[in-house]
Length: 333
Ligand SMILES: NC(=O)c1ccc[n+]([C@@H]2O[C@H](COP(=O)([O-])OP(=O)(O)OC[C@H]3O[C@@H](n4cnc5c(N)ncnc54)[C@H](O)[C@@H]3O)[C@@H](O)[C@H]2O)c1
Image (cartoon, rainbow, N blue to C red; front, side):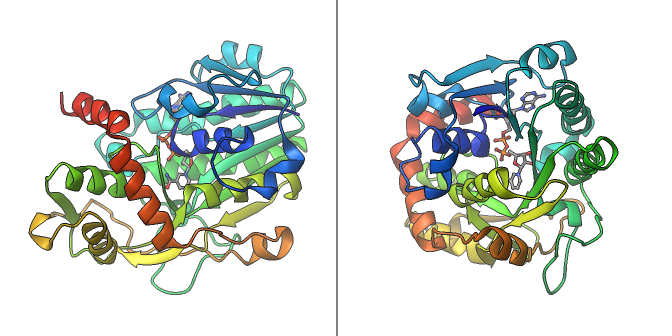
């Protein structure tokens, strides 16, 4: 099987690549039936894309890395033929950046996805896996969203992801293309660019700095280890039904304050290191996914308990200063 992975040098895409090529360091029975014969990564290497994320598979002869933009129709049209499956991770992914400026979110997440879908259709790609987020539903006070819930995104990021989801599903309904969409909750783990809350807090605390806590700290997120997200995507890639949406989640629901307490504890720091900052504009209060569908249809269950996964993650950042220090220096400069 020949697989094209967009955004494969980012946080989640690179875990998917490492997992498919047997270098995730974790047992992954979901992958044994789908070992790729060729795996092409298409990634523009924006600020969050990092070739070092692929170091563990750099010498694998099946891996072909192409630095390029999914919005570049000619490049995409040249690259797509010869691939059986596209797994589409590439996106602008940080809500705060989308509040500061929405243009790259619309062009990459919406137009870039359409450019890929067009090429996949033209060249008869067998399956298109579109990776999306629970944020497309907005915020939910109680209970959990099912896959049939109406979309009500609140940030330019989530609105652009919702647009890309609808386009992907429209290519199935209009053209009969084999498209599957996944929507996942918040991910954590190694190789996450240190602007998102967990790596930002951990690296600040390891550097004896402070950490910014939004508003009253009461916003709730469901945390899933990145490897469990990728296992879910692998199941959907293999056995998901065309035209369907699958939720991936089932991690641990925590308020930001509860998460902060665990991170302080893991880094041996106290509350004096926490600085309250004004809330994010339009900040969604709570996300919660119902994952019954992927559990019952595909036998999915998360495998990494949050406390173990968080301890592993903190250890990873502690032991990989050479990975994150240059990123923080470049961001500060
Ligand atoms: N991080 C989460 O918690 C989370 C949760 C659910 C879903 N998702 C989705 O998963 C996907 C991956 O997220 P992530 O956290 O790994 O993000 P990331 O920012 O770490 O990685 C995104 C990757 O896409 C690449 N990219 C960006 N624009 C591109 C373009 N125009 N052309 C080619 N490559 C481009 C970047 O260089 C980077 O390597 C996204 O689609 C995101 O919406 C993320």
